[in-house]
Amino acid sequence: MTIEIRPLQPLDVLALDRQPNVEGQFGLYEPIKNIRHGIELQAMGPAWSAIAGDGTVLCCAGFGQVFADVQATAWAIFSRQFVESARAQAAVIRFMRARVAEGPWRRIEALCRAAWPAEGRWLERVGFSRVALLRAWGPQSEDYWLFERVS
Image (cartoon, rainbow, N blue to C red; front, top):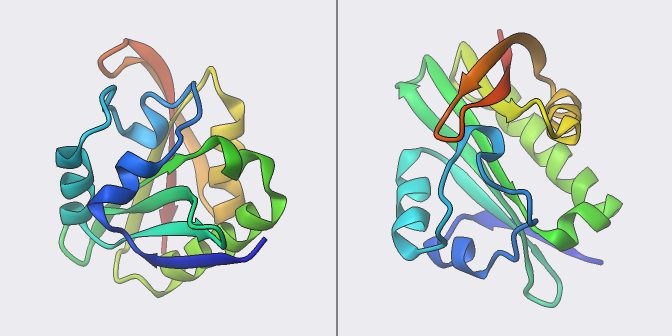
């Protein structure tokens, strides 16, 4: 499978065949797929999409700037196909590690749901450290883990 990583286009969010459990993925909450959500993600800060050779959108990921060039929040939305492709995951992890390393931010944080440990393992593979449990966080009052990378 060939993987192309390119700047996020708002329609990528609509084309993404999300995993059924994606709700609150890395701090995002958007139960309805719509173009507005794609536009908001694109406007938050640098963002990319991983596209398979056949044009399938595998994942969308990026950073929302909290304080310009100082602090950001990482986010990602994965498709069903992404989870099944070790090659796609490896390509995106390499790409995100490079973006984290070259980014201007002193602090990058990310959230993931405690009930889905795979989300936290993915963040650790990108280079984040788990630091705190946020109990009853977000619109569904779920437990979330706070991850960070401080340089």
